Image (cartoon, rainbow, N blue to C red; front, top):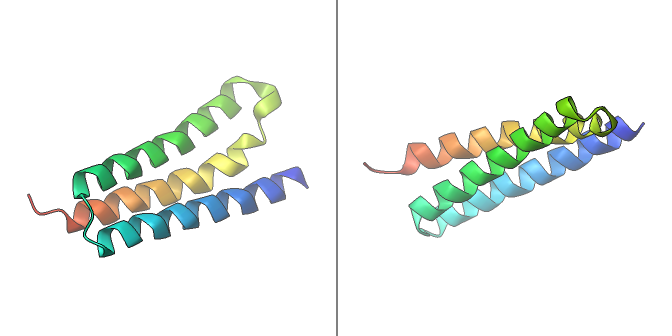
Length: 85
C-alpha cells in the first residue's frame, strides 16, 4: 500500500516539474538555467532510486524515484529540443 502512495506522489512531483519546465520555456526564461533545473531534477530521481537500492530500509523510495527520473529525462529532452546551438 505504501508503494502505491509513493508512486502516486512520484507521478505528481514528476508531472508538476515537467509542467514547470514547460512554463519556463513558454515564458522565454533563460534556457541554460532551465536545462540546469531539468538536469538536477533528473538527478534527484536517480539519487532517490540509488538510495533505495543501497539502503534496504529505503526500498519504497524506488517507487517515488522512478517516475521523477522518467519525467526528469523527458524535461531534459524537452529543453534540449528548444535550445538553439
